[in-house]
Amino acid sequence: MNATPIFRRVALIGFGLIGGSIARAVRAQGLASEIVTTARSEKTRTRVMELGIVDRVLETNAEAVQDADLVILCIPVGACGPVAQEIAPFLKAGAIVSDVGSVKGAIVREMAPHLPASVHFVPAHPVAGTEHSGPDSGFAELFINRWCILTPPDGADPMAVETLRAFWAGMGAKVEIMTPDHHDLVLAITSHLPHLIAYTIVGTADELAQVTSSEVIKFSAGGFRDFTRIAASDPTMWRDVFLNNKEAVLEMLGTFNEDLSKLTRAIRRNDGEALFEHFTRTRAIRRGIVEIGQDSAAPDLLLRSALDSVIASAAKQSISRHNGWMDGFVASLLAMTPRVSKQRVGWMG
Ligand code: NAP
Image (cartoon, rainbow, N blue to C red; front, side, top):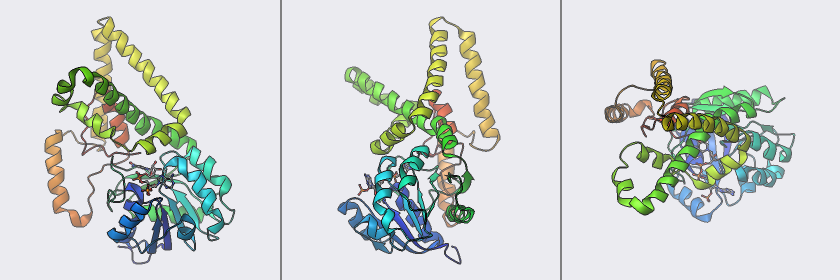
């Protein structure tokens, strides 16, 4: 718990997995004297009031941001531009305005033109998540030991950037700063492509299921079940991610398709040597990840029960079961040789 709050008033626009987790973490760590929030629907606002996690739930975005020192948009990427335009006249001079969107170039392009020069715009992306959404899905430990990437525009006030860094660090995150374009390229391979692959495989299996439904369900205990978990991620959020990180995703998809074609050709030509060489290379990458401590070599089930007991006995120390920055990279590699542990691979958007 922080001795001195970093902000007097924090306003969260949107209260789903990420907004709800921020609210819980801010409260648990004493990072703000007051947390106010709003959500698009009456249903969500009512639920947030019932949960009692924030100090005030307001009806409109304009009311929520008034007099706030930090405003964070916790809504789908595609909604950030119009909401920035809506709140602009009501922002306090000197306030920090941020977001949590999984894409950064589009956020800067869509939000920045609407914001007054009197506020500090510092976009952010916590690389942490689950496949759940809504006000009940958040938890205070979500960001512990996970990366949060800040993408301040050129000329951003260093004090504002430092204050936001301290805020995310206060919630347990490791903070990195990069340009929006670099962020989008990195996340295209570590997170966006793995999600696209999962959506594809589950969709393909669903078509097969028309013919062999019992087999698809019956034998889904292996890698396929893990893909269904990723493919259960929020459709609105992921639609917006792909539409707003189009170039980087298409670039990575091009490379992926080339590699897939090579493997396809190797199988068709009975080229065992090529397959063996490829799988040996990916196995070495996997071992490298384990060696640098970004994942464990323990079997999934053992690891899962060990993690559960550690988490149960160390709850006071807020140990999170979500791992670090390399999780998405692990997911992307394992997406090609599917054996993803849902406990080990933190979902990230
Ligand atoms: P979520 O659980 O679905 O919550 C979304 C919130 O946004 C809800 O409060 C919803 O209000 C509100 N909302 C939806 N559409 C809106 C619109 N058009 N205008 C205004 N408000 C709207 O989503 P989330 O997982 O927290 O994701 C929020 C943001 O975090 C996204 O930009 C996503 O890219 C980013 N992110 C997600 C993850 C992840 O794994 N989920 C990880 C990192 C970053 P109602 O409930 O009233 O509909």
